[in-house]
Image (cartoon, rainbow, N blue to C red; front, side, top):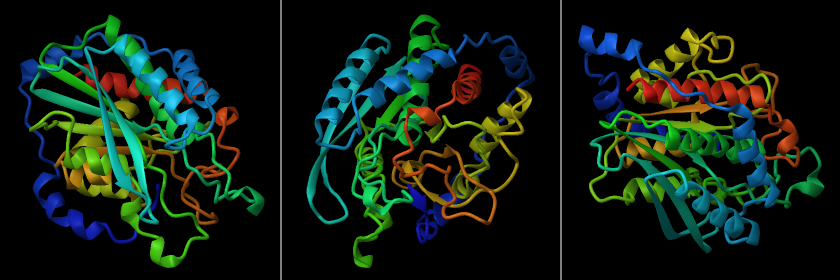
Length: 334
């Protein structure tokens, strides 16, 4: 993902329709939610799932590591979820080369009409083009934080939800998007730097969901949610187009004592999978993403973004635990 330059225009109409579209609750409903027992999310288990992805090596689409990781993820999720959908697709990357991708969707309570999405991307970038050493720019990255961290949280959620069922009237879809991080490298010709060359898996799914006529109440996107001392401001386009979802998640984090990390600040506008979920699928989605707030920076992302140092060494169990605690409380209280 990268800073968004021009997609705001395509979301303005959606923003006017969807922002703050939140149904009211009765006093009885609020009282019932106070009694919901949220099962324990295990940060160490989430860390295992992050490390297991990284152990395959960089998960660049069409590589052996990518294929082997997909097999492992699908088999593991089939042991947890009610249904697992594998959405194979073909698309084009920034230079018009055709490429195969694979979205993976793990569904719980698939017949429930009220559905909530938790999503992340599982591919890793083929270029370490933000690395301080130019010799590394054409090398693929492990993507421990940028991709694997969100997937690790989701796989731990799947493990927990298998044993501790969510309410029957609520369906959860954990969506693992592919080909999010294959945008043009920094050395490519300027004409190839197109914002729509990012998030290819989410673009495909948002236009052609895994189930015909699919809709969801809202979504939560997890991106770079595993590094130490994260800063999660309210990402600009999430706040502009899905403020009630953002506020729901950030209020939960605040009530749990995490307000030092989930800050009540407006973050940078980011081109991420939530853009396409909102624009093409009409699903209001909050992007939980680690952003740096100071002005003395080369990018707005965490320090090892798109570098060779985005490996398992930068993952902190405490951060995975915090993020998992927040998301679990949000979805179990629906």
